[in-house]
Image (cartoon, rainbow, N blue to C red; front, side):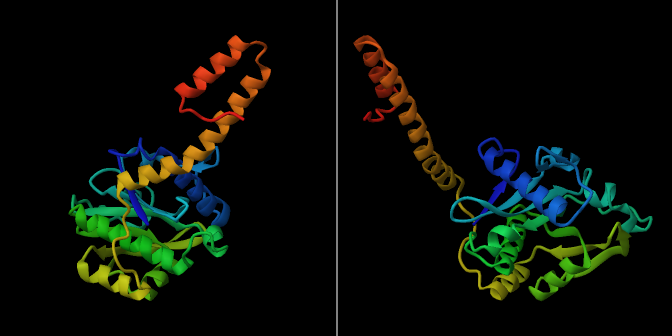
Length: 258
């Protein structure tokens, strides 16, 4: 399932964002060996300060299994500020109707071990559909994305081939990079859905996810409170202290004592 996090709801889903940054660190630094900035096990760069939209994929246990970042091209973005060599001296693309997709990744380790409920290929396609459907709903007409030849082949195999490329394919460290263009059309979305047999709505409503997150955390909180009350009750030296423990217990939700 897909969640979109932006400036309006990032405070509500801060824990998911944090897990997403950790996934990016594992993928881009640990697995792929990119020269990215890692702070406390999290990959965060200056473009995360530009109020991007994040398309985040979650499994049934609400673990982050994939993500991508969407950023307006009217301001700073990676193609114009980091990968400008691809443009070969041409001015960067800038349009309110064209956004840049970067930091696309899926959690191979979790999916390889069957913990995500999807294969890597299916998860990749679901994330692609999430990007395209969110973009189309937001009025975005085109996506520009910097990719390597491997990702280019993945796009083509999943019936999501770019309709054009910007600039040239150039060397970027140990790999080559190119800028691909994808229109956010209903036809493209249908092709990728058909390729991966994706049906129905893949986006989870925010209120439903918030309830699921609360239900997931509640048992942990209950256990912690239980342990606290047990310690307080066993260490009480008189009836007054025991009564105070019972009163606090009732005020915090009537967690039963043993």
